Image (cartoon, rainbow, N blue to C red; front, side, top):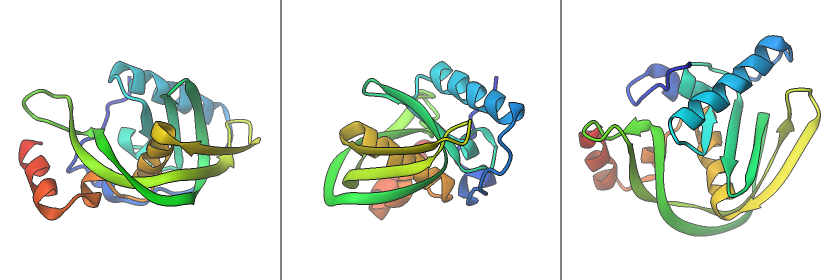
Length: 161
C-alpha cells in the first residue's frame, strides 16, 4: 500500500506536473490512491500525498465518489465558509490522526478535468464536496491547509505535528 507523505516531505510543497499518460499504470495508481485514502479514513487524496508529483486526486465524500485528472478549479461563489478541516498529511504526532483547524474556503466551486479514460469531467460543488475539491487542488499546487491559517494557528498545528 502507498504510504501517505507528511508535513516536511518536499513533494508536498512542490507543484504537481500534468498527467500525460493514460495507461494501465495510471489506472493502477488511482486504485492505489483509493486504497490508501480508505485505509487512512480520508475523504480525499492527491497525488503528492503519496509521493506522486502528478495532477490528480480521488475523493469519496457526501455520497459522491470519483477522481479528477489535470483538474482546473473555478470559484463559482466566493462567499467564505469557515469550517473545521484536517489533512492526512498533517497528523498530530500524539494521536497520529489528522490535525484540524477552522479554514475559510469558497462556498461554491467547479472542477473540470478528465477521468482515467480521458473523458471530460466537470463537477459543480458546494458544501463539503467543494471544500474537498479546494483542499485537494491546493495539494496539487504545493499548498497545505495550514498555509491558509492565521500564523498563530498554523504555528500551533506545526508544534503538534
